[in-house]
Image (cartoon, rainbow, N blue to C red; front, side, top):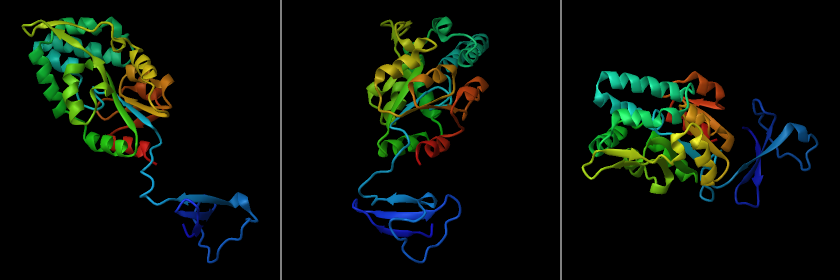
Length: 267
């Protein structure tokens, strides 16, 4: 903007511009007080060494399956049990994530069909690593550098997600997911049925109890993610892996990639 600039007490500059359209070059300093304040507005530029990049949000809440990573964990496990189980689980997952049926009605049923062993979950952990969304790591690091608290909230299996979370720099306490249990033999013994994340509105409860810095932005692809909307300033539907129309319709924003997410979060 072709503007007049002057000193300010914070170590940067005052910048004055005319209107909100094309800037007009001003060959002379504007007198103060201004005779036409409605046409002139101030901009403040501060030395970057004094202030970090600023995000629109102080917290970012990320879903994992089909958002941070391009797989649905239980669907991935189901494919190890043959095409019939895989098809049944995939259909159930899609209906639950689209909001057609509540998650609590099928969460335990899906795991009972899959019976994920300790070895299965270890292999799933590697699959999560391999399926990390393009640009996810850079976006997370950039937002942290701008002072944003980033947490993961997932209805997936904690032991499968934790390795990729740690690689991305998350503390264990910043991953909210569902614990799975095994017998000493490594065979499946059950899951934490007390976790709110096994229910349709559980993510809403987790976010409310987390007392994250505000304003917060939640991002995810499913109906359980959209359920967080009452507890955050905004919700972005992530469509980089799957687009669910019911979720998109209820979202404030739509992000097709982590580049889109970074552009949304950073001014």
